[in-house]
Image (tube, helix red, strand yellow):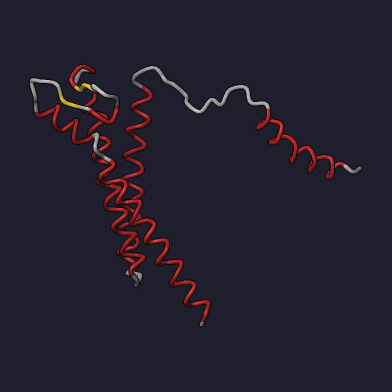
Length: 156
């Protein structure tokens, strides 16, 4: 058996062996404060900047079709989501754990009194899915529209 064939067999069996005998997943890498939140906040800023550039480039290029408009809506909603998430993470340092109570688990959060503007803004920032879910729907509509336009071109 030549060396290439042995390497190919090894390359096929190694992932299988790792899947069948896992030790630890190491899915999360915990960092002591404050470096973890700094990296996370910078990721929000870079993601918003990348989406801003994508929005500008698509708008500048003036691509025709609904798919490109859906992509622009996706970019705007995700930029707003990044701003909201960034603000929520930042405001999380200005409230105590006892300011938001969860009597029946995570899905039943309530603001404990006295109610302040920081608590209300933080609570609203935790509702970031109201921006991210519609954004992902517009991304889906964009991809579907672009796929259909390519499919029509190939049929011609």
